[in-house]
Amino acid sequence: MIGLERGNVTLVSHQPKWKREYETKVDRLESSTGDRLHGYEHVGSTAIEGIAAKPVIDLLAVLDDLSAARESLVPLLEEHGYEHRPGDVQGRLFLAKGPRSNRTHYLSLTERDSDFYAETLAFRDSLCENADIAAEYESLKRELAEKHPDDRETYTERKNPFVERVLEDAMNDRGGAD
View 1 (cartoon, helix red, strand yellow):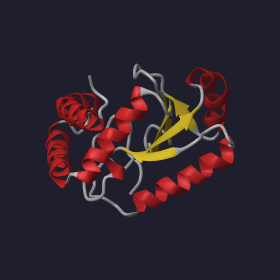
View 2: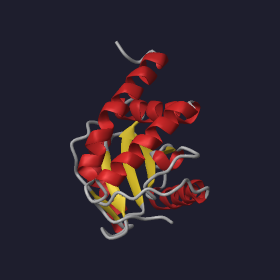
View 3: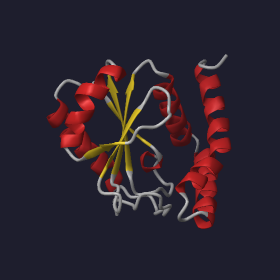
């Protein structure tokens, strides 16, 4: 299963096909954007083997200049079915693929030297490298999804203390914190 209604919180068991779906989407992005993007990462819970996730594939793509992408790359991606979703996350442009009734992919555009890039990979890698942390995260997500199945904003907000704790530890381990 790939796709979820916007605002909905439904978790499904990890699916091996999520990795293949990520790889297929990267191939399509490379075909449509040429050399404008310089690397891709599979992020979000669908990238963590063994844990439940919302069935929406999260991709992180690297570019040279985030400001220039607003005018040149975002319109191109919109022509290919992405919806630009302006937000308040520093260092990222965010796009969603699929109708609001069935979002299938999230695409975050960022620069390689941004805090957003470093933190996103640090969090993912912490979960991939530590089964206990991943299991704790999955348990929290399941509890919150049960309590807030139609309230993605609250679901996300209530995960934040866990995410911040893991991220702080991960950045300290990488030498990235003060």
